[in-house]
Image 1 (tube, helix red, strand yellow):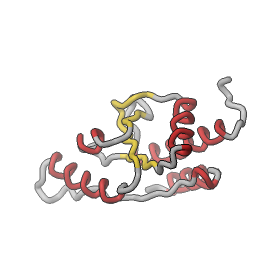
Image 2 (image 1 turned 180 degrees about the vertical axis):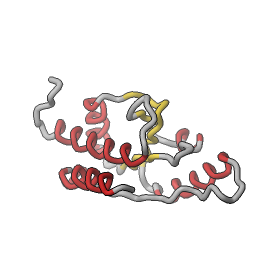
Image 3 (image 1 turned 90 degrees about the vertical axis):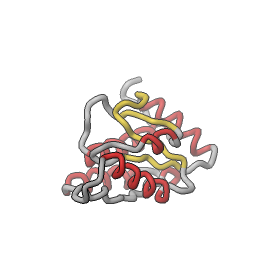
Image 4 (image 1 turned 30 degrees about the vertical axis):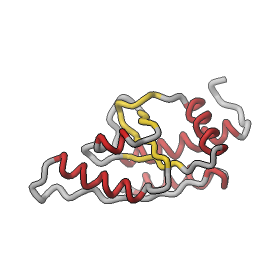
Amino acid sequence: MPAWVSAGYEDYARRLPREFALALIELKPEPRDRGRTVGQMLDAEAKRIAAATEGYASVALDEHGSRWSTRELADHLRQWHDGGRDVAFVIGSADGLHPDVKANALAVVSLSAMTLPHGLARVLIAEQLYRASSILAGHPYHRE
C-alpha cells in the first residue's frame, strides 16, 4: 500500500479510544498467475478470511451492501460494544468477496456506490469508526 494509506489509517486508528481499538490484519490476495478461475480464487480467499476472522462477527464491505449513515454506524458500534462483540470489517480483493463471506457476515455494508481502491476503503472505514466513536462519546456531530 502507498505511504498515504498507512499514514491515513494509522492516524484514525490512533485517535480511537481504547474501548474501540482497531487492529489491521492484512491478507495477501490469491495469485492470479496459476490458471485458476475467479471463483476458485475467491473460494481460497474466503477460507483465509474465515480463519483470520474466527471469533469475530464480520461486516463485509461491498459496493452493493446496505448504505449506513455515520449515525447508524455509531448505533451499531454501540450495540456491538455493549454486547461484547468484536467485529471485523472485511474488505475484499480486486474481485470482491466470495458469496459465503457475505452470507455469513453480520451485515454487508457499502462505503460508496462507487468502486473504491482498497487502500482508500481502509482509510475510509477507519475514519468512519473514529467519527462514530466520537458521536458515542458525545462530541458534536457536524450534521446535527
